[in-house]
Length: 632
Image (cartoon, rainbow, N blue to C red; front, side, top):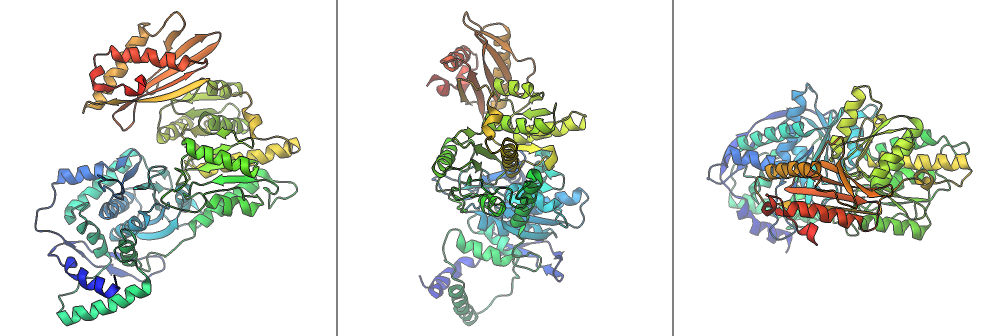
């Protein structure tokens, strides 16, 4: 439809009764004149706003541990959008209030995003929310989660907080927010406080979250000044001029994302919001310096990766910069890399180092290109994995073992903190190198926080890592950083080659890692609404069952692991020095019990699983459990 006709037909849909004013704030940016942000007049239906409890619950449901996550696009039938522009607006404003409550007076927040399709819609809403609360907002565009933290601690930075718009490896219709200060990522209580403040702001403004018109309209009004009513000739003249401007700007009217995104972007285009800040290139420069300093190449110090072929698989997330802006400028051949272009529909595979399709794609890229090693990133680059030159995937336990071997060379005797589902072989591997293995809980934030706690207690703990590919090092500000882990592996690879005259690789570091013959994970649904209580009672019954010796048989004996931080881990003596194990734990967020099983003998996994299944069948709470996963 021609722009003029489209605008004429749309005029009537923009008329709604006025109601309620939402604040006035003076905003001053570092490179701008002072300006008043006009009090917003929300366009609302005459119905009463939702009850406070409903609004609070709508925001509370967005909490996903130590970040915010929700559905931002209706892609599948029945999808309910929970992370709306207005929700993002109020959450950003709530973050400003939270920073001020921590003593930050001159609040300046950088905002970046991964390439998700909903990013152009939510980014302006977040920027507007920050400005509405009186903060200076900085748009850095496409970024990574680690880069957003670096933006705070970078030399000369005046940024006091940062927000990353991402939903990690989740499907394309999801999005979320991660928050940082100079101390690192925020924790669960911090997120709860921000969401509580956001809900209060939303309630005060009487904004109906999720309303297809009024939700986004509220955000748009933040950057616009409402004028008095005009007559028909005025409207006709305005629409004629608007049509010409629309044609000139090549805006696709009616496009479900780009139409609204264009307007949101214009609404926050102020001197206080720079159109761009090259944070990702600054972060790439920082990573290059770290590689140069780490290798100290005797022949090519400025190009220490010369002669090395590295294949990066970014999965069309934000990680493509690592190939083109970090490795290649240092001399690496990255021609075997794939899926470097940001594409929020993730057309090739899910960017996830735990995903088999992602790892298979990277293995194939390494083999086809003859690369010396491969690197796999998740969407926002806070996780990674490695592929050996022979195509061996180095993720999960293998990646933790690789990083532990590297760390223990420089920090002998250090404690390595991991999540609860790591293998027996990893413990042996760490101990053989003089290290100590502290097996803790699932959840990368739990793992990292335990490492921080141990170091405060005087326990040397350099590496904290989860089997998912999340990992942090004390020397890197305890930051969950997939690019830093990949960088550490690259530096170790080059140094090993230099020391051996070019023959060694990363495989040698893992040569004696004992791996299970079989491994599996099963998710057992809890059908009761009070799933936490049911899960807790099942875990207690499992503990008592093992303690009573019911799990043991003539071919194997079962005993509880002496120290358990999450659920109950059972050691299974499989004979002839072989050891299996089973861990039954409750999911951190979902109505699930999770059973992990490993065995050192063929057929051992099925035997362990079958034994646990018999426990469940005889259990009093069996009717509340979905045992299909164990029975198939």
